[in-house]
Image (spheres, rainbow, N blue to C red):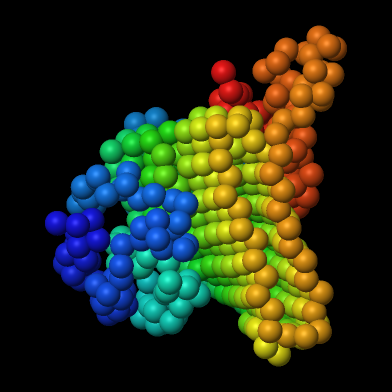
Length: 421
């Protein structure tokens, strides 16, 4: 039995109020072809590691005996913890700010079910195979609803941990009302042999503002597929930062749809790969309305025998005049045995736009390394300094300095792991 057939068989056994939508995804999966190296969007990402796995029936997850310390010092965030795809936080006991509502697949009222159904798999593009798998198998759906004109000062932090040998599927839906503001931090991680999918769909109303972070911190033998798909309406503003680690197999898709005029989006992305790790980042920016702007900066550091894939596409639709869009991808190879496949794309059908794109791949400058070594700095520390300097600009641009400060020692530890021996 093929891996995809196992997904379909399991999905057909699920019976809940999202089943009609799950069945639609199953019908699409039944017609879908398994991605191979001849599939353009999977050309540089092999799924051989996944094909060898057998899916496990989802079991109720239990929290660790000693829950890890998850708080970010000084941030005072509203933390929502998933373990193996099951929400461990009792949202009914949380003190929520005015204008903020949370519900899950099991706790949703009749009205909330209607709203959730109207959003589920609507923002997320259907072309993504593992997005469809998540449509079918997501056993936990968290819906975050921000009312019109609400200003949620407390950051909302969604943490997903996957244990060794476990399988996990969850979905997050976010609706930000007109003129509302909110900060959302998504952090997903596993250091063990595991398989997980996690997708987020976000809709920003008119003049809404979202400060967004997505930290994909899966390493070693973890297999992960995820994505964040955001729809912007008139004059909406998005400031998003993505950080990705490499693992045995990892792919993240980011889609931003400008469905309103004068919408603005800023996306900074960083990926860091250790020895023999793989990370695939696909971003798609759709400008469907005029007067929109997008600024996308992506930087990657690739270790020994690691493989990084970046495909960034900006699509300017006919009629999306006065659009301003820029995409830049810069990469640093720590070893000539590392590999980076980068493909920035511009597809423009409007004639009054300002657009630019580019990509670079370089190695560590031996002169800079030599300069630091001659001043008494050991090679390991010198490499950390040079690596951090390469991404420092994007870290400094993070709107939340407390989050940037919390990340800094973790990034330095990551660089030490990536050092070529």
